[in-house]
Amino acid sequence: MTTQLPRRLRLAIARAARVARDVRATVIIEMAFAIPFLVLVGFAGLEIANLTLTNTRISQIGLSAADNASRIAFGNNLSLPRVREIDINQVFTGVEEQAKGLNFQTRGKIILSSLERNPDGGQWIKWQRCYGNLAVSSSYGTQGQGATGTAIAGMGPAGRQVAASTGTAVMFVEIVYDYQPLLYGKWLGSKRIRSTAAFNIREARDLTQVYNPSPSVTASTCS
Image (cartoon, rainbow, N blue to C red; front, side, top):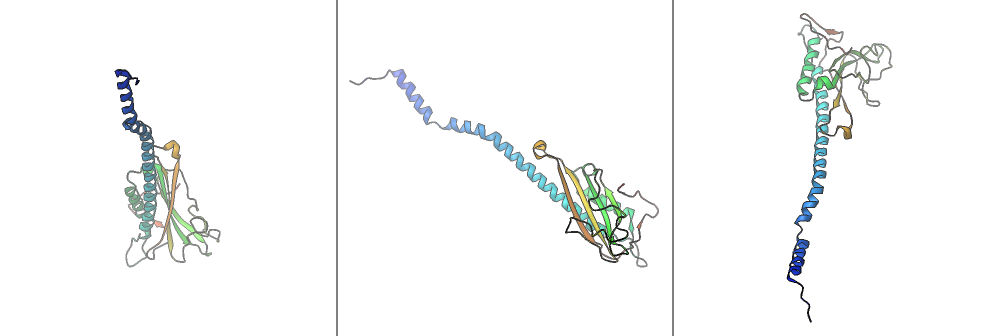
């Protein structure tokens, strides 16, 4: 004798079976757990991409500044071209234009040095100019160092120093920038970007001093 279940019980069992076969609820639950993680990963990717882009921009700014400084040539055919304070300030104006959106004047600093050979055959930081309010100094020497002797081998990381030849000069740039994270400040931590660049001057120039003829301008000294 076959026992038949009550109609209501049969309907309940059928509904339960349909729910068991329906995977839509499972997908919704999985997405509820996955979406926050995907959002975090996505924003982390944006943070890394922005940091990479900023590193590239800082490097390019340093290269452009060194290149522009190497091209300074004010004068006429009767005398060697001179370097003027206004020319150096214009190089730094170019830096600010390239660094738009980075708040470089507050968060960064660029140090431009003229590396030359002293009478003893050593390397000499003849003059140095700076732009930016970040409280850092040159990692490779300050203005006047190496005027005599051979203590300074050049400027740059150990083993990869740049040195100037006799009668010429190298425009050496150090650039430092404090990166501000978009969202992950605590996770990423403080990030200081450093870059260097160097170009030999493009033609002979008057290396005796940096001139400031009338009307004079304020020199961008590093003090």
